[in-house]
Length: 350
Image 1 (tube, helix red, strand yellow):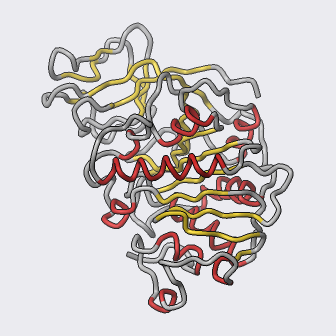
Image 2 (tube, one colour; image 1 turned 60 degrees about the horizontal axis):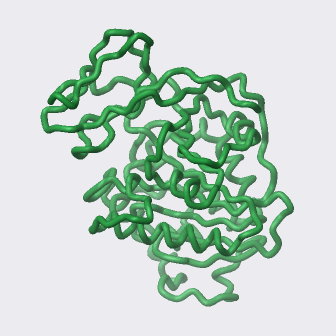
């Protein structure tokens, strides 16, 4: 596959085995041994270390007064490449000296094997496995446990800093709002400044989750009280096919967090908010959604519209109020979510 961004020492170390790396770069990087203090682990404003495969810790020489302990994760679904390109470009700019490290940052490339194959997952959906009592076995469960350990250790190393986790994704279908975020359910309230940052990053819609969902962003909120979001940044496309210019405002937000600076802010006039009213679950092999497979996210359905059918447990018809559908996917595992049904919510206090 093509190189989506400059593969220098830092990006090559993180993305080794997931995208093509020029042989010349391989000859100057030792992927197995990272010695603290060696020239290869330094960068403007700090240093870095490979904490685990696909997990890169950035350690600033001096964190700024507004610096958070930041987790930035991409590739939890292996075919969602735009966030990988976006974050790769941020790292390339950092290493080249166009930006400077000013905050502790944990960069995570999630499902390495799925990224190599260009698939959403290998055996099962990684983004439903982030809970500490996980007892499943296999490639994705093992990776979930590894990533939970790394996040736990990272936040433990920065007990006095505000915790932040942005898990960057793209959706498998078009959307009435191409750039939107999911706010995980949890006891930790979202700070008003987060909404202003997202508005300045050109996020168009927000979806408030209604219950525990065991996604990666939910993990950091539930167990660590972090400010967290799952960010959907357009549609899932192969490397090199992504339309990155609309993500420039999001890149400015990420660059500011990495630099330990306060990100740009804006008012919320251009954002719309929704809350989950109901989940459609695939309970049987006969389950199907009663609308076209290419129906965009946030499409509205009128009262009385049948949305799902199958067994006695699978059926659903819209009630007295219109509902919009988000993340529809009938081809999920049995017992898994096949769609969220949402309704408008008021703007939060900003």
